[in-house]
Image (cartoon, rainbow over all chains, first blue to last red; front, side, top):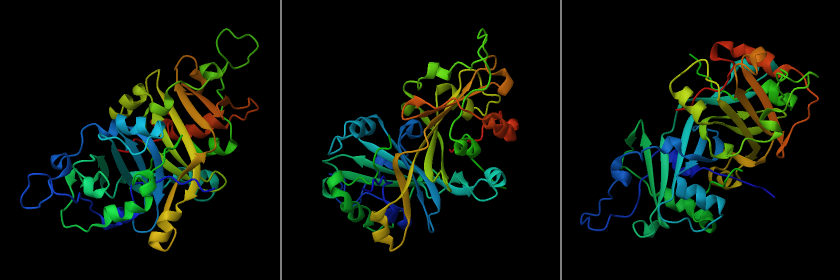
Amino acid sequence: MRRVVFVLVAVVAVAGVVHYMTPTPGQADGEAAPIFGGKIPPGYRDWRLISVAHEEGSLNDLRAILGNDVAIKAYREKRLPYPDGTIIARLAWDYVPLEESKKAFGRLQSFVAGPPKNGVQFMVKDSRKYASTGGWGFAQFNDGKRADEAVHNTCFSCHEAVKARDFVFARYAP
Amino acid sequence: MRRVVFVLVAVVAVAGVVHYMTPTPGQADGEAAPIFGGKIPPGYRDWRLISVAHEEGSLNDLRAILGNDVAIKAYREKRLPYPDGTIIARLAWDYVPLEESKKAFGRLQSFVAGPPKNGVQFMVKDSRKYASTGGWGFAQFNDGKRADEAVHNTCFSCHEAVKARDFVFARYAP
């Protein structure tokens, strides 16, 4: 049996920007209002750990998936679908070989997190607001700023692969 | 400039067990009393994230470094040495290729955390109790039980490589 844990979604990460695809009610022009008002949710770096991952290829990073209290509770209770208010964050850093352990082992052995890389991504559960994308809104921030709106609709279509897990790739790492 | 972040220490992890090397004051027989009384510190899985890493070779894991409140505060304030009461935890999981992204990318792309692996390790700062090892005690737990006492003294000697960082390899991943 493969037990796989994941990381929002690699395809989304490659695309480089994530937005949310449903217009906010009351917005007549069809423009999507930015999630969190375009700002990073405060305190996300203090959230608890869901899991970790490594992306190869052009992403070449180490990443951590954190969850707010609602997310962690739902994960631990194996609750599906995730309740409204769930927020899942994906942080990533450069994938750096650790020279200190290379010396000790005589070969590359350890890879550690370097500077931040590939932005910070969020999935936000609001079953009414994001009804057309499984109840999830998606957002990416690069250097603290909400990523460009020039977007693709790859986020949700890729997450549909894990519809049975309420569109969430990341499993809880005990 | 290399910015490296780390993970207790790979050599220690390879050795497989970590213990603490200084006898507890008052123990006449020279036996070291188990850290935390031989029990895993409660609530460590809720601690905040310091960093993440990947170990190759026989370790072959993905890992997360978590810190208790004292540790996180010291990290963020770049405080050295770490104050008494600091506890740093290293969790690790099997390094599992994610088939879902392999299909999407046409190649191996994503590696995620599988079942727990290589035990859980802790560094505990008590400058008086562990004075002979830089103020740090070391402990490993396998399947919830304190690892065998049949030990090597590799822990501290390896950590001495980063004496300038108060013997701690892991850097804070922002």
